Amino acid sequence: MNNAVARNWWLVVLRGILAILFGLTAFVWPAYTWIVLVFMFGIYTLVGGLAAVGTGLSRAKDSSRWWTSLLKGMISISAAVIALIWPQLTGLIMVLVITGGAVLTGVLEIIAAIHLRHEINNEWLLAVGGIVSIALGVFLFLQPVAGGIAILWTVAAFVVIFGVLLIALGFRLKNQNMPGDRQALRSA
Image 1 (cartoon, rainbow, N blue to C red):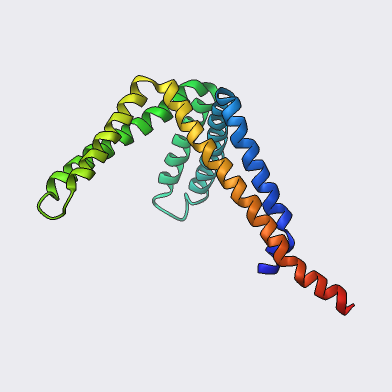
Image 2 (cartoon, helix red, strand yellow):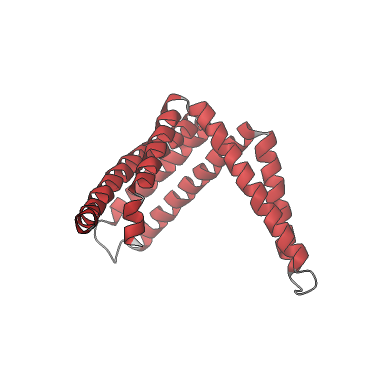
């Protein structure tokens, strides 16, 4: 397995280059990239929904719970249709889900800090983290477009860094593979 990965080092480099290109595209054209991501979500959800419907229908004779897969598939297909027909609405909903998650996480962190105040030192740090999380959620709620761009740019920065690391790994794999190639040439 290791030799196969080392021999295909260029695929790792290519993946890194593609990651960097995606990240840079997200920085340069955030609106288009956001819409593309929403469409990708819609297509992924549609395929998953169709597979779940197929699974449910194929298990109708074998299982009494076949309808759960069918229901899951129908919900997924409905979400996919909404995502593909109204990508802006879907993008807004995605930001609002992240907003709700940030606020809920912040509230739970504050509650945890209050409950842990007699058991740990510096529990106030957990409470401050909760306040920051709530503030982020409120910001995203009040400025969903800016929040969406901030989320996208965060992902883009991660992807660019990951791409650079993949390229470095690919060239290290190439260098790892070369001594074996040289040795094979000498013995031939």
